[in-house]
Length: 117
Image (cartoon, rainbow, N blue to C red):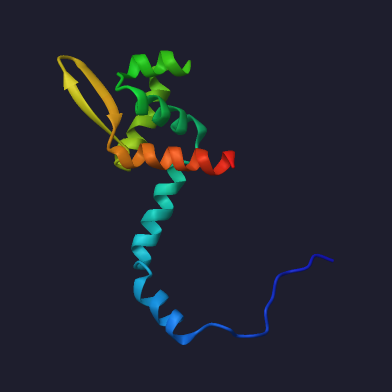
């Protein structure tokens, strides 16, 4: 029989509980945070973010770098842009993509440090 974790005692300090309730983000912010982390659940998007953490690239360069077709790259870039993880700039007819900010690189690095422990 599978054992589940249960607890019949209460040790929660009322002051601790009040503090946690006061600092807990709003429900919609937690929902947005969960959506943010869902983006990192796809290895293709992780590869793209890692690649862009080293250099900005256009769609065709990303496709070559990751051995993917441009359509698949464009689809994933759209998702990453919607979540504000990447940004773009136009140079003539070419659009170059890069990480939106240094937070994204820090998240990738911290995640990698965690799994390598």
